[in-house]
Length: 256
Image (spheres, rainbow, N blue to C red):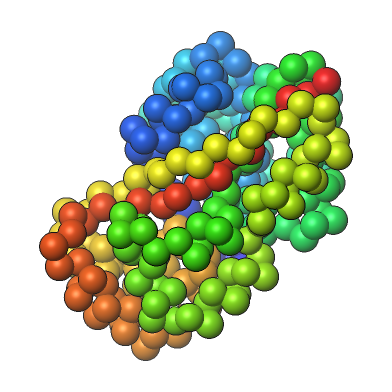
């Protein structure tokens, strides 16, 4: 998947759910802080930080189309801005932020670039600032909990995708160890379930799947395979609420 060539609204068009907002409020305490949202995509979480009382928010992404789309949203808060930049070279000044946040980013980075990304995040943080990394680990991918039936059905249909994910997803202990090399204070990783989206109908869910919206793994499938997945989702949805829930790991390292 080439993020620079995909539709500008692929990672936009929805709001952060209350499940994420509650977790963020309780664990990251963004009120009054200057926040950098690295790999911001369509700016969903950048805007949510502002609504939680952040003093300022800068969203950074290396896709010009995403940044253009995020910047042109109606009603964009005055204290939210977006710039084109890379996860290992944001272009942001030293010691300028109290919170650096990354969601669903590090699984796109090689280990070398994960290291450079950690160094970049710590560079732009103020003393005692928080580097918060939210991603799905391979442990999550192998979890078949019924709450996560939308993604679990995908891997049941196409078990070969498990190996695709295994090759790119972080392992919780390994990424924790990586953070410990650069920060004297790394908090214990926390797991939480985030509601990605609640669907009004099965048709709406299928439409989102067919558009490959918000899930880079779906670009590994052909159109026919997507249709097969949609058929299996119809069977899997019997007796379930049409809520897509993902399990995440969040690491936090403190800048010194």
